[in-house]
Length: 354
Image (cartoon, rainbow, N blue to C red; front, top):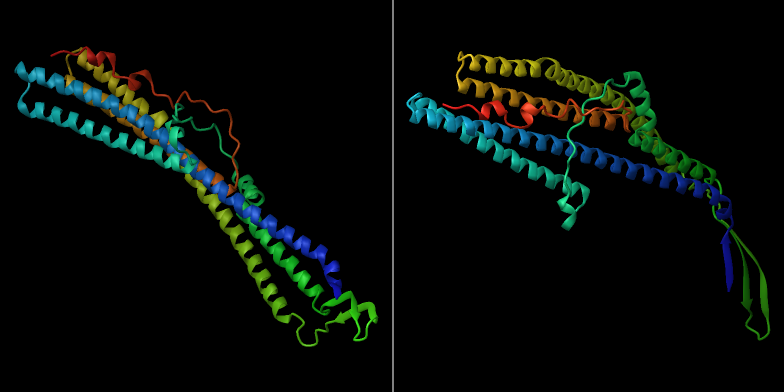
């Protein structure tokens, strides 16, 4: 009988514990990065769902306007005021509006299912609803220099690569510390001799001398892996800075598009509708031209909503490149809500008669 303990294991235990802690931290960072990527994907799909909900509302407004135009064309044709060409044109516009509404409603339901899958919902949980509309864009953006430095300190993939380098450095330290000494086993042994009553109890010692194998191969491999991890960290840092710059340029471009719609295009569309109404009241413009101006205004708001969606998706991409959420000023939703003239069919248009 013998009881043996590797003596050097007691001295190597703190180093191995430190190495295991570094490996565990690296695993946590990898998992956290995966979670962060999933969260960003969920937010992108959520903004897309908000945009599709508002687009469906606008499509219904366009459909009601097109239906009004088609019914009006029917009555005017029966009264002999317009020909068959204009009648068929209005019918075609109405049917096209129905088709576009059906297509957008399908896209809305499919988007709900995509978001439901990402959220991991099933059963009664799938009856969730999104009542909020897209928020307006913030008043200002972060400085580029601040974002690059923020990415170096907050990105989980960079932190994971940095932690991986520490793991290899720690493993290399353990290998170098134990390369000149083999196993040293200390124990106690009890044996019984061939003659009855003879028992021998005493200490045991076994030394392993690493004459040829001093872990040169293991050390060289760890040194190469450490160099690779350091190069990987440097390359990842360069890519991260570039991604931040590219994502910010995209964000600023989308911001300019939103502001151009808000400050230039939408006021022009609204002015066209107002002037068309004045010309119609003065009998200088036909009713169908007035309805077309109204449909063009609604189409402009649809494009404006899509531009806001693209901005928020670009902002998520910038946050992904930075590695965390960006602080914004208090956001107002006044500009994202549709005006009354677009949210519902114009009362003035419903009063038009042949």
